[in-house]
Image (tube, rainbow, N blue to C red; front, top):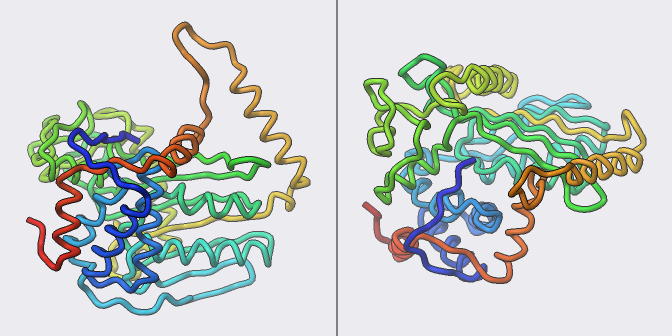
Length: 342
């Protein structure tokens, strides 16, 4: 995942960021408990080293038409001893996926395994956030998510796929091991932020409406994001397509009849179904130790494992606060005061 770093930033303590974010969210119509859940996710994203996935997302939430459409209670449409199909009620994903995560954990603890599908929701943030909750309950988790089309298939010049992340988490006796990747060359949230701040895109992540590569975020918004790997990535495209297919099992097409829509499919289970839980954790820790002890190429300081950098940065940010683009802070203050951001 590309990580936009603020160039003109304000440092906020965690409490200041929370107060500002929750005030803005409540002003645009979220209940206090919803604002708390959403803001906790956004601040955690920033703490983990993804500023674009933090408080700037509130500006996109405020602009999204679905934010102002009616919301209904989240409800279970279908349930078996090992599965749930959940209607998100048009709640924002930051809240609906959080609620689905809690249900998946409870179902897996009860039955050993849980297949959980969630539909009728959008804008859900980092899947790592949800799977960390799963892994810290000593469960293995996988999460496949699809979205509204913003990504072109290999060789195409029209958006046909979402950014479609896949994430996997396993428990250890320390921090969980989590891998989370979008199948797009850049995430839609970062593209939107760069457009708002008039900052260029990295090379090879987007095309304009005529199908030509572009680093102009405004032209990219009128064109398409590319699959990860760029113009000729059959791997990124193929993985994205399969995730889009899997989320149809989660009900992605149910709200509007579109096979290219938002959906989330959880697979959560107890490792003890297959091998003793403690043996599994010990094996994972041995595997990590061996990977980190690999002889390094010249100039390489260390071999990191997925999620290690984020956990380190989170500890520092919880103490020192987070950097937020000055324009984003100004926009959130405007929203919190009842104004509109243009």
